Structure formats: structure tokens, C-alpha cells
Length: 181
Image 1: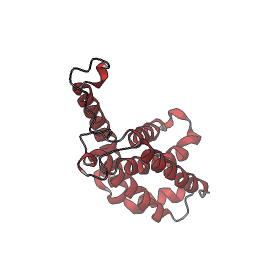
Image 2: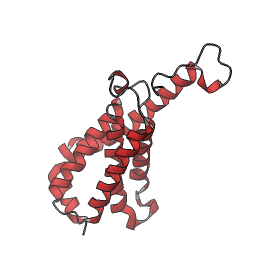
Image 3: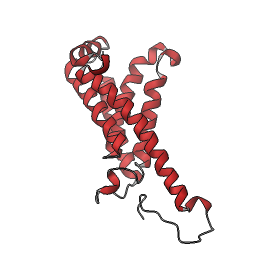
Image 4: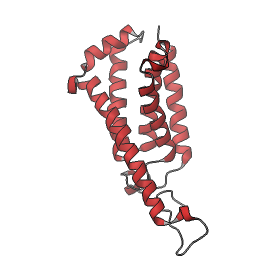
């Protein structure tokens, strides 16, 4: 049975959580989380890539990446900006949600690693919260109020999709973290 098309049998009193209004509330809750996490990250990515809203732009972001010990800083700054911008937009609209969530989570893992030496209350909470939220969305799926729900091949979300995407993101994040000076 698809996670997007669960319906309770009429007058099913066996589980109060299976009633249609609970499923709608679940979908609205996922939409709110997707919009919050997705648009925040997409805006940050646009700052990194394009310099919008007072952002650094790609060249200054690359300088920071170099300062933090990343090899090929401009390339990795572009990868980070693309992952944030398009991963965030994907989460916001619910498109390729496991992939979008994993891209954001992997990027935030790198941000957490950079900030980690400064301690927990030094700003690490923001990328940690965004990363955990994105990982949760990769695992849960976007809900029924999403583009994924309209595309036949993507309609039936399975937790394994999120697990696989998050494992790939974790490996790539570990490699990226490992090559830092």
C-alpha cells in the first residue's frame, strides 16, 4: 500500500489515527516542515552560489572553503551551493524527496564538521537541526501534498529509498570531510 494513498475503511474504529483527517494533518505537518527546511536551505544556497540577499557569492564562498582546508575550493563551493539550492527547492516542493533530503543532510554534515571545534553553542545547532530535519524528510517522504505524489514512479515512497540516499550522502560527506586539511 502506498504511503500517499492510505485510506481507512469506512467506520473503522480500530485505530483513531487511521481516520482521514489524521492523514491530512500528517500531510500538512510534513508540508510545513518541508517548506521551512527547504526554503531556508535554498535561500542559503542562493547566497553561496549567486550572492543573493547579501550572500558571499561563489568566489567568496570558495575563499572560505579554502580557509577551512577543502581542496578544490571553488568546485566544492559550487557543489555545496547546488546541493543547498536545489536540494532545498526539492524539499520545499516535495520533488525527489529522498535525494533532496540526503543532499541537504550531507552538506549540513560538512557544515557541522567545520563548526564542531568551536563547541555546541557556537552556531553548530543551525546546520545540525537543518541536517536532521532533511534526513527525517528523506526517510518519511514528503506526504501527499507534494510533487512526488503526482508522479507515478515516485508516488509510493518506501523508507528504503531514504535509507539508501542517506547512506550515499554519508559516504560522500565522510570522503569530503576526510580530504580536508
